[in-house]
Length: 468
Image 1 (spheres, helix red, strand yellow):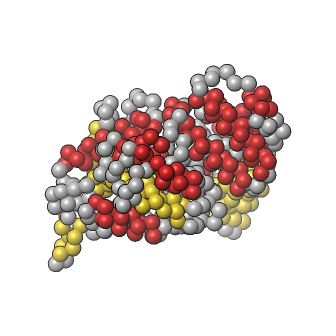
Image 2 (cartoon, rainbow, N blue to C red):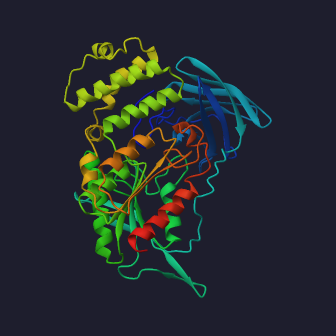
Image 3 (cartoon, rainbow, N blue to C red):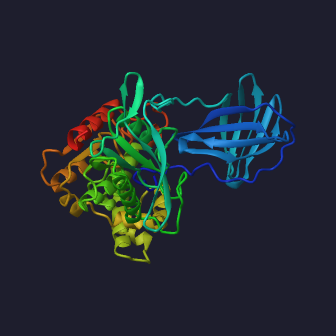
């Protein structure tokens, strides 16, 4: 088990994706084709997809997807492709696949770093159904907008306005100082404006639902993602908050809206609380936002993740105790850490080798600027300063921001307010999908993007607390 960030899950498998140099194949023009199959690696199954096509010159090309790890379009190298066999190399990860084609399947062997895995692939592209993703034409207007961050970086987003239908025509509902609006802030990592993950587009789904219920929204590409510029800053929790503050300032500058709030998912929920504590937001909606310190979040993520993959309680406790001690040393600024002694002091010297290897990699993972800002963060002081209405929602099966622990912390620190609503939804995971286990491996397999009940509750609460 390796470190889990708030939303961008680092899966317990090395991503089978690296950018590969493309070599020429020995086959002339071929019909565009795709093949997909599942690779069993211990208890984990990973979907592998190969896409074959020809360029304008008739040269054969191939790309590989690992959709279970949210990786697409990896350049691959075709060694051979005919009517009855194929061979594809992925040299950057020491991998290859070769098999015989019979009917609608290709049966062969996937090799990686000396290990061999049987793999059966079916002809055709992998069909992924996302029924909640909105399809044009939309009964409301949208606009591409740009706002400028404090360091001059241009951030790009989509402003979605609600619409009213009168005598068959669509009119923008933009009465001055009446229409509520939310700025959507994504979870950790560089996310696009739709917060796309495994072909799910939760922010697009939310924006669509809010627009159909009289609420405007602005969702934007994080710096370095989509159409937004990157700039030179080291990204931290605080720099991400500053970018969101620029989005709020833009919305206020338009003069089109009444109350202006922040709707944040995961880390975005934490940023929403930071902005509300400064008086910058009129209301906030926190979706799986943390109420406890970054240290506690990371330790509990790993506790639930390790338990969910079948490790005994004694092993889980030992690993998490050692991890907590390591994070404390990092927070204190300790640069030289005797890892073996740390494991022994935490009673974790007899961990399975796989976990020991993983633990040895943690110090490096805890060194980037965002992670340092996160493990040092504690929401308590900000929560105590919030006087705007707060809606904080959690999924009961969430293993990334565990529901009860974070809800109780928020409840204990927030000032009492009749507008506050804190709620745990049974059966929902970190993405607010109906789930079986809540483990990140399910995110891709669930067709639902977000629970309809959560969408309805958000719209009703915003209209009740923002004058919509």
